[in-house]
Length: 151
Image (cartoon, rainbow, N blue to C red; front, side):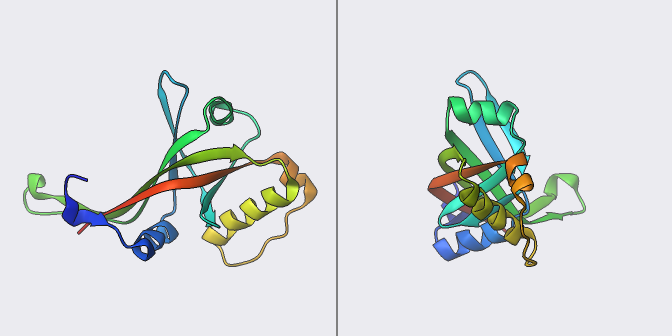
């Protein structure tokens, strides 16, 4: 990282940023061009969980190339100043890489769906077999994480 004073190295701070983020941006590639998509997400067991329709470009790309990159951001605040060129933005981000897998087992899918649900609401949810069958659940085994904080 070019600006080392902004680097977040403490794993607990990285986890806190991830816990506070509301959107995950998942980057995929087919070898020719990148594809970036914002998603809801959940965390658990050192993995990132995402859900999706059963078909679509994201699913096709994961099947073709499971290597992914993702970005999460939290604490975003615009800091206006008298001159527009002096404006700034305060934020914290985590960027990670990993390997995505499409979960097939219903119990594993429910585990992922519960991780996503817990991220946004403490209220428990029971998933029906029909609900589980209607969605794809993507598990990203996280391989690397880096954090950045701009005050």
